[in-house]
Image (cartoon, rainbow over all chains, first blue to last red; front, side, top):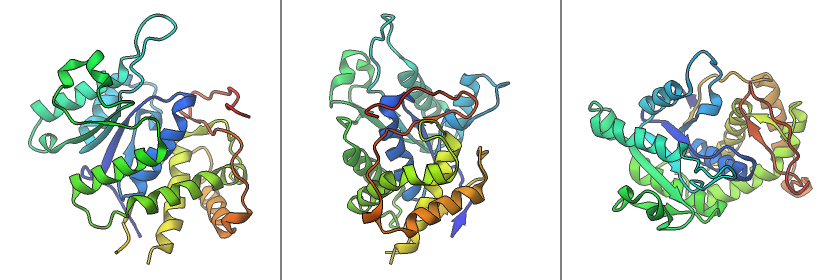
Length: 209
Length: 58
């Protein structure tokens, strides 16, 4: 059974999109769907006439939930840090602080690689509960699952061991799915990937007692 | 435990939803033990900016 998502179902994913991060983005998208929510990120947007910042602001406005991974706020080869993720986290905080009644209901999950790494570059977050993921996929799945369960109070969200098991199965089947769908395994468009996850989750739900 | 309700909006995919559904259904119809472990890292990119770098470990 499927239904159209609304504000209380949208989860903004604010994370790196590079090769090294892809296994984690895959796990995040899968977990969000499998918990009954709908992932949103700028990769899904294709309107070149809209500025990137406008897209980000619109997505944040539409989402009650957000997963921010600021673990890649590192100095690049050019000597400058990548600051998009902390910047978008700041917009989310701003929307929650200064927005209307609905915006004030926003809830965020903030990931760093280690528990207190952020204090080296964004000490304004002191006192905010940051989750360390250590780039461990099962831990990321569990953290997102527990956070969504607590924040949404939805009792239909499966336990994390089920999610990890289903995700591992999905990751194993993914190359075959991609090949059969006629896509390039090295370059799956984000919207196609989300559609694949939706169908895989549908298969998993069928098996739920 | 009751199942979650899948939330969905029609996305602009590069291949038809029917084709993706068929590929997923066919894959899940096979026993997992017959499926080989993935040997490559799968990339997900923005549709209008395709990238073709080699997967790590492949």
